Amino acid sequence: MNLNVTFRHLPSSDALREHVAQKIQKILKYINDPIDIHAVLEVEKIRQIAEIQINAKEFRAHAVEESNDMYASIDKVVHKIERQAKKHKEKLTEHKGIETESVVSMA
Figure (cartoon, one colour):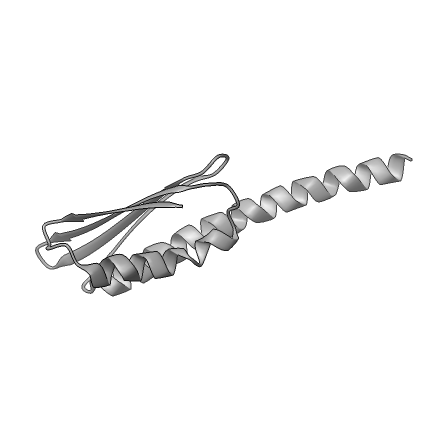
């Protein structure tokens, strides 16, 4: 896993970087490939914006969330990405399951 965290209009913080890394661990159980993750944490006036983009071999996901608290924004955006990854994994397992059932029933 290659995690890159970019801070825009706020000072670089190890606490925020660790929070992102910790939350991203939830997503890794759905993706097996080596992945690149780019997180952008941005402040615009009172809006705290978190954006995450994931690139894997056969999976790409992007999500943006905003709130008044950066930690809440990170939690929300990770939840969105997790739903996308879960849906992708379910599609793959359903597709593989259908193929094996059709082969078994034909024999």
